[in-house]
Length: 283
Picture 1 (cartoon, one colour):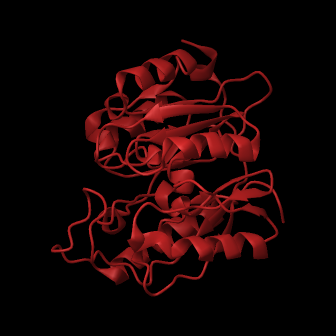
Picture 2 (cartoon, rainbow, N blue to C red; picture 1 turned 135 degrees about the vertical axis):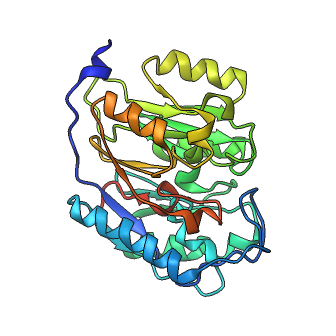
Picture 3 (cartoon, rainbow, N blue to C red; picture 1 turned 135 degrees about the horizontal axis):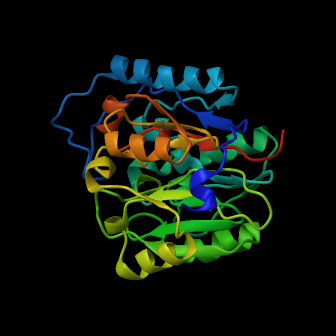
């Protein structure tokens, strides 16, 4: 067994941006999970979201809130609202008109919070498609963020970008098919990740296997319940209670999986990570 599989895990205090789903509903379809004909329960979505919010506080994390806009039911998925490293915020530019109006609200919030805010030229959906793994930015494309956004995000943050091609429409954002398990790594150390191999094309699978040989490979059953759409502080990993195999894999690696049910928000195509935007730096 490798060092990464036997290491003692350490929780790190995180700062997150969230948005109450007071206007949540599914009245249009921009991903395979959204079925407007199926009823949604806003009160249930809010209650489930509140449990996630309160858990973060219990774990010692800090949670900031952005005000929800009445005409944007997907604003609860704050991970799509930007990508933040070292006090600099790269704002989103949504692919679909249904979410376009969220972008100025997120940019305004970042500025008011003291972040150096960059307005993008390229279509990108923030931490939905950009994940920080150590010093490297893992960047997804294929359904939402465009390839040019990968160049742009690299220029904004001055970091290496590894492009990954998503091929299964169920996993339309990178954060639905890949999770970074160690938000803080030491110099020369490799971040631990988990991912669903068949969500990526063969070239991307090869890149992931080479760069992260000790990664947790998650089953399609666990991926299909958004098991990978999770949030980790390096020890505690908040996941869907239906991702039973992933839960066991995490325990075997020394992580502490915590189960939070966001089944109502999954009707909009989002889970735990979708509702959680990490704020790194500035305050």
